[in-house]
Image (cartoon, rainbow, N blue to C red; front, top):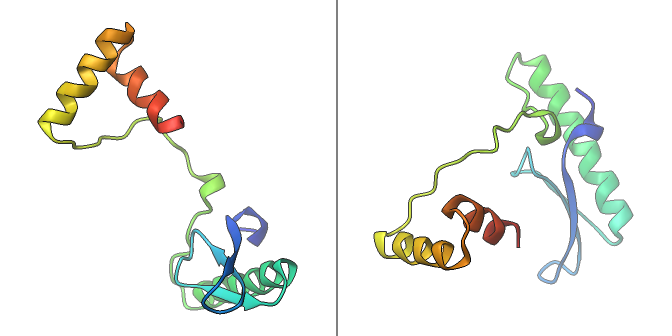
Length: 107
């Protein structure tokens, strides 16, 4: 697996006064740096090292989010009153509850 397939994010950390690079598939890792570019470079290096260590130890390497298959379905438990309210809203709009929920999640 290439480290380029993993999901990276760089954000400003007001607490640290620097940019923090993170990897969604390995959330316990981070890298602080004075510039966004340096934070991204740093977290990519950390991920490469961790993946190398995991492989060397025979441990499972996380699959990148970009390579996972998604069914397009998931279940969400909500209170009955919320379910009722959403069903009424969907009926008033003339759409299915599924379509209403999908639109709300996308928006």
